[in-house]
Length: 169
Image 1 (cartoon, helix red, strand yellow):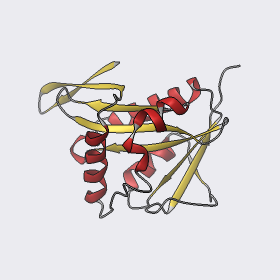
Image 2 (image 1 turned 120 degrees about the vertical axis):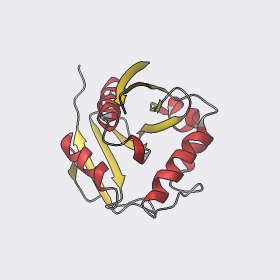
Image 3 (image 1 turned 45 degrees about the vertical axis):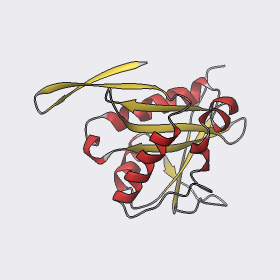
């Protein structure tokens, strides 16, 4: 559990980056739905977003990780590390409400995601996104992700990136 303090309108606001808990799936789904709607995109509960139906099954019990940021009351951001193979994981569900963007929270989540992926033993991390999510793409590039062309993209995605990461042996 990490506590992050960020000045907001002259006040100190506390943000907590933590492991998501079973039972928070609906709140995380609502976050994803709201952020996507800000860009004119829709959630897909039966396909692309089906993994949000059970965090334990799709993440924690499958050599993965899922984290959220809360402001003490509400979940305001999320990301997941999803197992693709023994060597490769996928960064999924990295979303942050618009009003919290530009405060360093995206970088905080990205650094934690890379740390968690390495700790889980992965050597490469991939992601799929939509070009409309330009701030996210800028963040991914800042952390060394490069575009690549996978054989398949999820329904709402039109852009893929990857990054080699190295684990300690």
